[in-house]
Structure formats: C-alpha cells, structure tokens
Amino acid sequence: MTYLVLEYPKCSTCKKALRWLDDHHINYQKRHIVEENPTYEELKAWISKSGRSPKSFFNTSGNLYKEMHLKDKLPSMAEEEQIKLLATNGMLVKRPLLVGDVILSGFKIKEWEGLK
Image 1 (cartoon, rainbow, N blue to C red):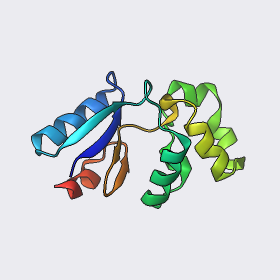
Image 2 (image 1 turned 45 degrees about the vertical axis):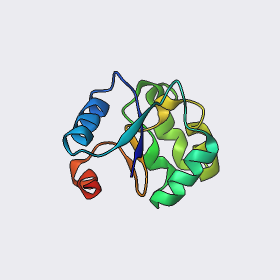
Image 3 (image 1 turned 120 degrees about the horizontal axis):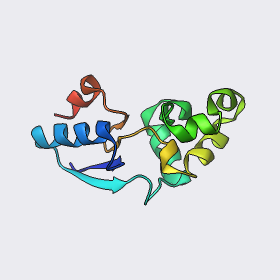
Image 4 (image 1 turned 60 degrees about the vertical axis):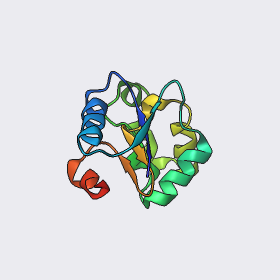
C-alpha cells in the first residue's frame, strides 16, 4: 500500500514522520497541505473513515487557529461548518495527515506503529 501524506515542508513534525516512514520502508506520496489544500469532500470522507470528530483535525497550535479564535468558536459550530472551515486553508489542518487504510493526524509513534 502507498499512503498519502499531507505535509508542510517546514514542519518539523512532518519531517520526523516522513523520516519514520522511510526508516520503516513504508511507501508514501507527499502532498503539500497548503499548495494543495484538502477539499471539503476529501476531509468529509477522511473524518468519517477515522471515526473521530472534525475538531480533532484542527491544528490547535497553529497561528491561524489562534488568530481566528477557533478555540472559542468551534464548540458552537456544527460539524459540517467545521469541515468547510478546514477546507479553506491547509494551515488549519493538523499535520501530518496520513491517508490510507487508516487516517492519522499528527505524528504519534504508537499510532503509526500499526502501519508496519
């Protein structure tokens, strides 16, 4: 299987994740999360497949998230609205985002070890 990894080249966590995939000989294809932002349809499918809430896909440590005061706004937003918002800018999406037979956002080695 070849995974799709949505990443931001300057992101140190993304670099660690890609290095980990290389070290474990796991095939992947990179996609720049800002230049090719995930679409609403993609996000809706991936969030559904993950079994997690749209809120867990937000990059809560990002500047844009903070500038938009999303910590205060997300709780009152419907899930559809949250997904539409995620689709507006790749910098809002928690990265790296790994897409394949599983959907993983962020780089937590314990979760990624299941890929081996």
